[in-house]
Length: 89
Image 1: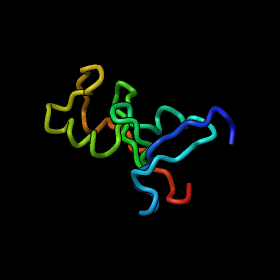
Image 2: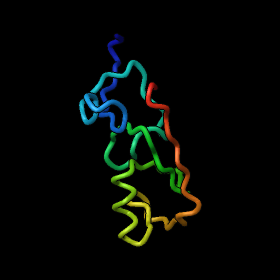
Image 3: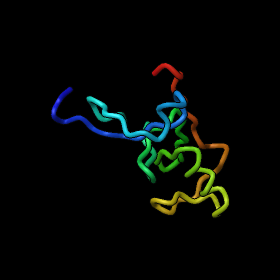
């Protein structure tokens, strides 16, 4: 493993891995990491402002007027992108 390994908590893959910090040899693309809490979830929701959120962080925004918690931009639920990795990746 390289000296520049990055550690992320993963969520939504195998049960034994969830919420445990894992070393990545390379940083995953920003769109694959929650912009708010920093986990690397199996499913990310991409807002129209391009911020990516995990499902729990996204659910929290739904009750607060559908506004990005990072930049305050309002979003339309129908315009939110959903990216899901296969369970083996």
